[in-house]
Amino acid sequence: MTYFIAGNTAVENARSLAQSALPNAPQQEYYEPAPRRTVAVRAQLSAVLRKVAERELKLADRIDPAPRCEPLAG
Image (cartoon, rainbow, N blue to C red; front, side, top):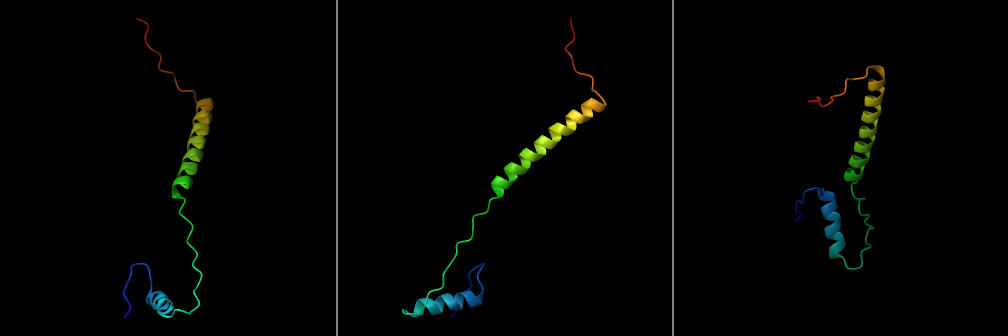
């Protein structure tokens, strides 16, 4: 009997069941998938976008300098 486990197919379940049932059966090598690096990628992407935004602001300020908000002398 094959049980459904989320993420596995019936073939994988049958193969693992067959290997566990036979004590002398050759075991297949299992390679652990690499951990996802979304946090590192997001951090790098954020840094790049911040740098690009700073550059855009500098270029825009050179083209059309915005008046600075100065405190009123009073």
